[in-house]
Length: 258
Image 1 (cartoon, helix red, strand yellow):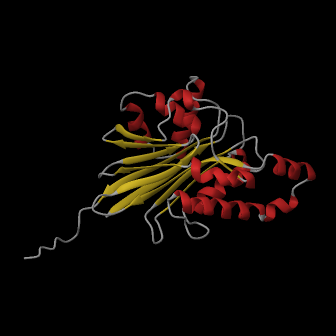
Image 2: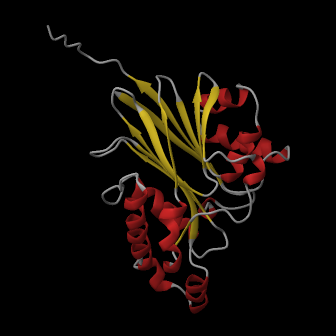
Image 3: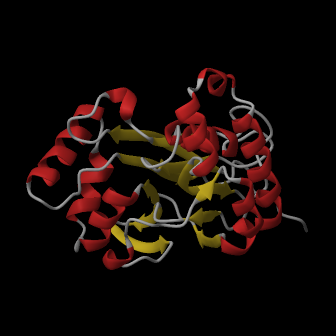
């Protein structure tokens, strides 16, 4: 049986208030499905993209309704459901005329990565992604998988993602990336938004993974982020890290048929 210990760390842009954090991170132990992990990065240029990012991750892990299957066809319909729910959000009723104009022209936008832990004789993770939010699969202090497989130069100002504009949803299924990887006892999955993910892609050696694995308090994470920003290694962007530590328990009983 697979057991997962999960925590989310985050930090807003330097100089911004807590309420200005525009990412989203969520997890659940699973309800009828395996444990779920999700991270999203709302675009500052959009209207209310923080709420959109946080709605997407909450919906994927099943916090506010049935969780979707991790398959492009199912997720296409689910994104449409999320867009409809967004349009009916009571918060939008109080929007000004200028805000409504921005909503109509620009909409809300977020990169997205959702992951499900699948139990069984060969436990694995399966994930879907749009954009430059990245999953790193680490075993024994060394990365054994990265999804999407982006290089440092692939992180930019116009990543792919999920928009609230209805005309963009038709191509979501075609653009979704899907991957999976086998899990072993002690493996760790890290889901990171773009600024942190780009920094992690550039790191070499096990030291950085040891530091992330040892994080035990939000203040420690924020000091790490502040130090890397001061060193010029990490861009001044909202930062989110979801860490999932995996334990694969041995079967409680062995049945032998003679």
